[in-house]
Amino acid sequence: MHHPDGAQFIAGRPAKGTSGRTHTVVNPATGQDVYTYELAGTADVDTAVTAARQALTTWAAATPAERSDTLHRFAEVVADRAEDFARTESLQCGKPLKLTREFDVPGTIDNIAFFAGAARHLQGQAAGEYSGDHTSYVRREPIGVVGSIAPWNYPLQMAAWKILPAIAAGNTVVLKPAELTPLTSLLFAQAATDAGIPDGVINIVTGTGGEAGEHLVGHPEVAMTSFTGSTAVGRRVAEIATTTVKRLHLELGGKAPFLVFDDADLDAAVNGAVAGALINTGQDCTAATRAYIQRPLYDAFVERTAALMETVRLGDPFAPGTDLGPLVSHAQRDRVAGFVDRARAYARVVTGGEAPLGELKSGAYYLPTLIAGAPQDSEVVQSEIFGPVLVVLPFDTDDEGIALANDTPYGLAASAWSRDVYRTGRATREIRAGCVWINDHIPIISEMPHGGYRASGFGKDMSAYSFEEYTQLKHVMYDNTAAVRKDWHRTVFGDR
Image 1 (cartoon, rainbow, N blue to C red):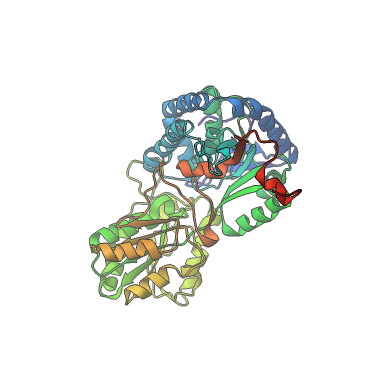
Image 2 (spheres, rainbow, N blue to C red):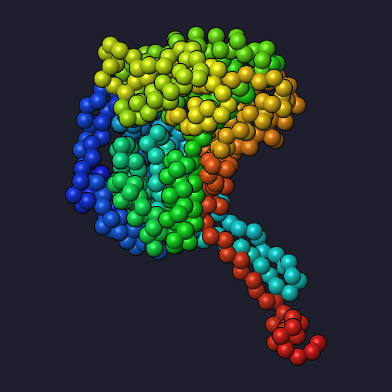
């Protein structure tokens, strides 16, 4: 494990925070300390924003091809260091190595490669004579310094989702990773520098949300804020951003429904539910959290899903046979356990519902958990648990199933399972969520946008649509007539 020289990365080099307080990264699989660092204070945020402002002039003026070439080199550097990224991510998050090697790291390399290509496709609408007397065209320009905040559940991928569209569009970035998991963001910024991305284009400040985060969001020289995290914190970010009238992009919580109609392939649905609920130990805002099963399949689904959950192997994230790692921290494990323990008063815990004993006792582990019989208005159905917990509820008619799927404040992701094209087509139209999967749940792809409806926030990560977040549109209009007196002037002075 390579120990960075401080958890800040400003103007192309590592630095130590100056808040006077430290934080320790902990391996949640063992409870052992991994790395202690000095937290960023407000002065460090100011230094990073200044570095980003200074880098902006040159980076924004680079041609799309120049930015694209540098990003292609960036992808190669990260690919060369893939194993270091995977192991570091597993160490700080507790993710099984097969997840970081096969999902987090390749997904990030693919994101870089996608935005390397997309950087050359930033044009606005082509010239046209829409008024008859003028030629109009649209320019897309960088917004400026983007201050972004990333969460702890996918630290590398979330850093990439924040940084890549912003810099591909010619902006510069100050990113605040979660204090729990800064290590791969720092590796990412170092790799960018080594690939030739100019100093100050990507800066990392690792501090608390209350100090570094709020200062970054409220900073008068930060033109835009992009935040991924809980809806509660997202509301706070929005409040601060309004004081300086910033562009705002929020990717907040989710409570994805998993809707199974009575003609679905039951085995496919059971496999999909266990994988979709347990990926990253359930710490995924698009994870399957509420399974609604049409009555004829309900009992069999509960039985088979519980049985499949019981085969999932918990263990050391670095051991080859491990399927599921710990939660990110003991505090998060206890929070998840609290939801499940309170649910026993009104629902049935079919399997799981406890922390494993034995050799995993010192880690933040929790068994895959299935809860049945919870009412629709209960907290386990309505609130984001963010752990390896799936709640299963029955429904009777298709109308009822879709209504229940829409019946939470969130709208990030959802899936529907059926062999009937009309039933699935209706589900894709009527479920209010930013992503609806049919007969699958979880896959994402760099070419397609990710982002929510309602309390899940607004704006898109990934895809060419993300440039709509990270560029200013400017309408340029030329007079073509050379007339001194325009016809419309009569509305102000004189007659026709």
